[in-house]
Amino acid sequence: MPTPLKRFLRITPQQLRAFEATARLLSISKAAQELSVTQPTISVQLRELAEKVGHALFTQEGNRLQLTAAGEALVRVELDISRSWQRYEQYLVDMVQKHQRSLHVGAMSGAEYFLPACIRQFESAHPDVMISLTLGSGPHVVKEFNQGRIDCLITPDALHISGLESHPVIRSRLVIIACATHRLAQHPDVLTLEQLSGERWVRTEALTPAAPTSMQMESIEAAIRCVSAGMGIAEIPVEALGSDDDHSALERFGVAALQVAGYPKEREWLMAWHRDTPAGAVAARFLQSLATR
Image (tube, rainbow, N blue to C red; front, side, top):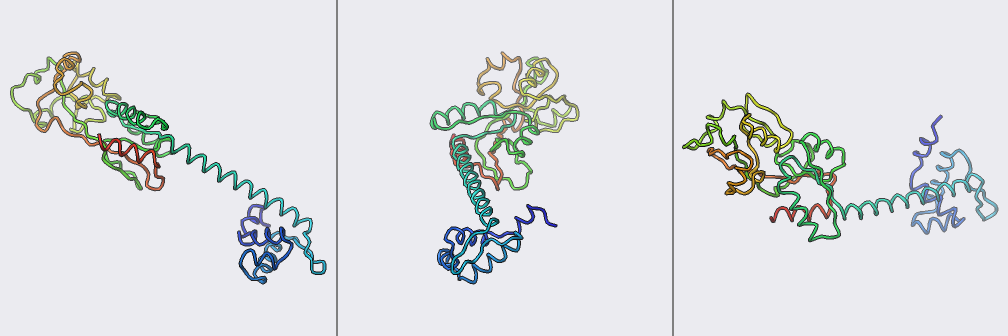
């Protein structure tokens, strides 16, 4: 015996429309005219609906239709369904309107040196919009993104996630730093990555070179502190130390930017979102704002 839900799912929208019109007009011919179908079509749909319900829905008294008790109950059910669907449609409208006024951005470590200023500038130009930001390690932010709690990602790498759209938005620069007293800090020649292969690297998510001996840090600030303490060298964003020619900032951190071939190296940041769930109008405006900086 089918469950009530399975029985309901066997009912077609056409049958419900035919029933609603006939119950309201108490006339098969008028229902057929309103729905732009033939009378036999309405009759067949009503008969099939009664068979699925298991009870007669109408009685014929002369030329006049009357609802049975089961038919009157189905009218109330149909009205409940209609009202529930209207509430659901209003919920969707409210959700879209709310979403169009807000944006939840997730960003990988390193974006904190440029993204807050970008968000502040965008919100100043769009005071009706609020952007919330989740900043953290790659795995954590990607997990939040995949679970739908983040609308879009700001990432320095092309993520290998199926169904993902991405667009370059901003460029930053990377340098390799060492402790100010490190033997390489005053090296007269431009170094190569091969010459650095024997060094201990303080790794962050920004680190590109392969390093057989390394330390893993969760934040760039922690990596800088380790380098300052003479525990290794690190690849970090220039923005973490101030501007390129801000030697006082380097001295303040107790580090030196090494002269390495290919550095400072450009790093392209991407804005990514799921193709099947576009982030919406606010995300499009934010994307444009980043891309024109």
